[in-house]
Length: 336
Image (cartoon, rainbow, N blue to C red; front, side, top):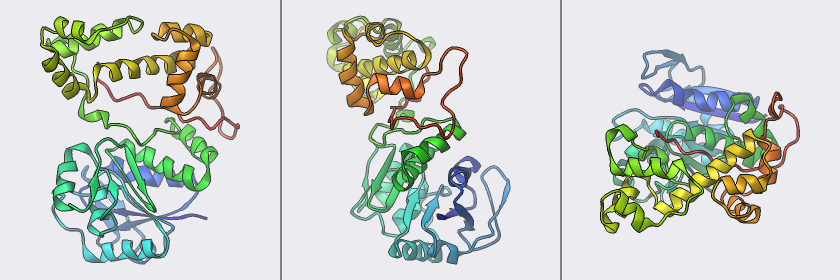
């Protein structure tokens, strides 16, 4: 049985703290909750007291050590004894995981020196400043380097835990747990953290927001960036700069991604032939959709539909039912 030690800190959010406990508990792993100060309880940011029956010795002997969060200010150094326990666990072969701000604790052990890592976007600059030997990446939801895994903000912790389960126990085990949690079984780590760039509401009168609303209204139309800039009453250079600041990407990449998201929804929710799905999403042929879809998500539209389509009046795939090893792309966190 897999032994997982979850290290909790005082003043951390309950949601982040609960993610690895829930995910690895669903795996039926032996989950031990340990307080950073080696005590019997911690107090969360929400004012709740959480029992922590484990001890630092449980960290040292665990197969997986997860630090789901860290307190603010992140500049405060973690206790040396908990850092020593994490280093010992890594030396003996454990997987080390820092979710969200937990990456600061892993960085403080020195295990991220010379490695790539990520954390929540609003503290990424602080991670770089405090630990300059760490290659901090904002274009990743989670980063695996050898036996050290870090993830971005709150929900990305779920993705990182499922990624680790998939790597250690296979895609079927990860998919089974994802269905229990009602989340996507796989979100590729190599993508931007969309939370930093929510779509502005059209009511703000922002010309970029109005442009995005215009683009979403008809994904089949062909758009010229110069025309979009004129519509937004901007120069091409200014439009490109503001568009990237708002969405985190270029107009062409954003439109391509939205078309693929629309294709995902149609494959999940309708019985339309793939040729019709392609046309409705701005792809000239099923072959064109297949190429872009497979490149982005790692599976063909047909495999994706067989895995995630819910028939009218039917039920989604049941836990334990064998499904293809699909790797669907997430829908970005947007606020249209």
